[in-house]
Length: 379
Image (cartoon, rainbow, N blue to C red; front, side, top):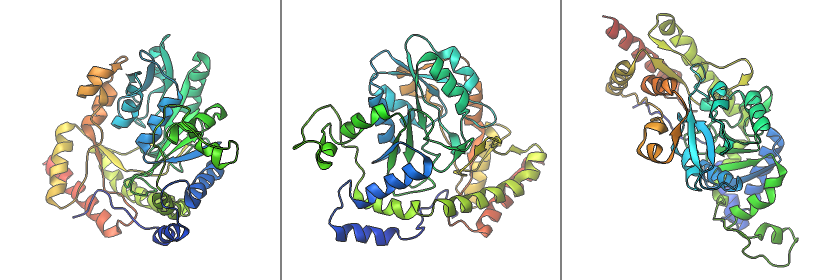
């Protein structure tokens, strides 16, 4: 079986876990947590990075920092993971879905302004597959309408837009280090705080609503409960594993680019023949090559291809069921305008196996089976 994803060891992850145990701090906010935060801040030009248990936790913390009220609206794409919307719905806000671009499958920046009204408080661009949204246009809309921008950069660690790191552009940004991402620690995430006014409250909400971090810095003589937060801290053992990955940021990105370009080169003849469409990366975007997808002719072709690959012991998967068509989405959110591009992409998209340790032979097998399916479909 060629799996869709496989976690990997990049360097000293296991050694650092043992070191964390030896240091006597395996809970949270120890040496490796601070080292990861500092590395991300310095490398990506982010004001403050706080490690959290997951990308979902980062989004939930960001939603809490926005101080949203019931009836407030937050604009986002429907073609995203459930956490993007649920984080804002759980604080009483209403997700407002707009359509995506047909080239990058990112939120269509030209559709955002029409969805803005007096209840709109924020925009959440989702950088799909490590390819940036059109952030200049989005930030301009936000400035003109006094909106917050929260980047869902769960798939965008070490990807860039016009030289700026994803997660460093909006008021807040959210990373994921889930085992399916480029840089992993099992489950983990980070909230990126670019607007300094959110730093103090983010520390409090992350640490059970207490001013504990001020106590550790000697700014208060004891810590106490000051706000309604939760436990949004990452375990030090996970941070130790993560640090072993972040030390190899560029090596891992280079490896994923190599794998991505193999698929792109060898599948281009099928695109030229009209059998499928390959991903697009605009010139202003530096991808981190998080995933490689194809768009088939139609939904039936995609579903047939999934079964064909499974018979060849290759696991390829579709991605999101659009949130506007989900039971919770229909109940808790609204669609702003036509979402036909979203639905079309959801029907035709297929993600191919792409992970650090996949071999050339395994990639060749995937390509060979795609070619075989195309020949069968044409006959």
